Image (cartoon, rainbow, N blue to C red):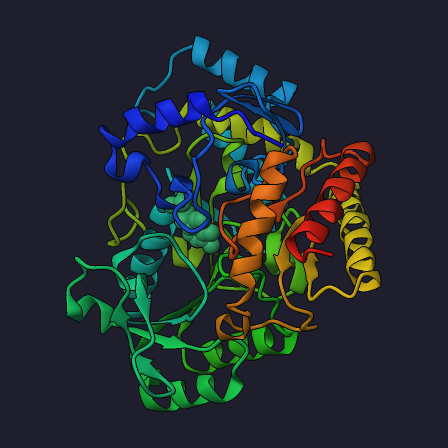
Length: 433
Ligand code: PLP
């Protein structure tokens, strides 16, 4: 099948003269899969259309935020109503109160929240708060977790088990990276060793409790529980970065899913209904350290923007309804199990993982993939063929083997059945069976 891409190609060529690599966020450039990034012009329900009028079932969902799909009426109406009263005031607004109240009333783990404008900003602010609260400077993170482009977290492990990090991007001063200790996921020994060496200096441990930026590396609950215990024993704070899992695996995110109480939680994506919003929240005692009450400074010109707050409120008002997350999970499990059965039947080295309405295509048969280094690198080769097969046949997923996909409320059984058909055909072509 020949795919029409002339308009996207033309737009991408213009964009390359405007933005580094033609994009405003790197993965969009199709760097690892090759080919032309599609310029989208419209989204509606589970579908979106590109500049060449190709239609796609969208499983990227703007990298997670669109849990109700595109153009959901209540969200669109809320945005239109809010913006018609003014786009921004730089003062408190009622929309902030409404969204804050909805979240706090339905989340056992936080009783104060601060809105910011992105997930990165939420994480950066949460780290400062943890350091301000504990008076310590070191932070522990895990290989394979992504927390936005925060200086001290753009860090990979040096050599040795519990080691001070080395930066994974140019432009980060060495001393920043050295404040970060990088451990392996699901590794209880490494955790113990790290705390016995640096325990008194560790302000916080930050983890994606459902790591979903490097495949879907589902952790043993026992590891997360141990992490909680070790942090408490050492007076270090536990930060759950729930920018993806928050409002995705349940209204209370992974904290609720596992029944583990972190000290600080960061949010992004779904919380803004498709508009740029992030947030961090904690118990009152910790949040009282944040300015203007406390001495940990954090601010934002567009923080709590009324249009974004209205979008978030409309979206979360749907999510909080009885049965919303069970329905999300059931449809996703049905979708995933059909594809897994097909791959089994055909003897393909392939398995789909899922939790809630997050899924990931793994190009190996391994039953458990819990650490970044366990991902079959050979699989990337298969992914790239698979990705272009999907694109050519009307399915859009994130353009990288390490990205997860998302099912929204409007990916109904009919849409999912169609997707199963396309995905199974693409798998056969990928494996040339
Ligand atoms: N934390 C996690 C777990 C994320 O997945 C992301 C982005 O994908 C971020 C933080 C950064 O969020 P943003 O891209 O909104 O800055």
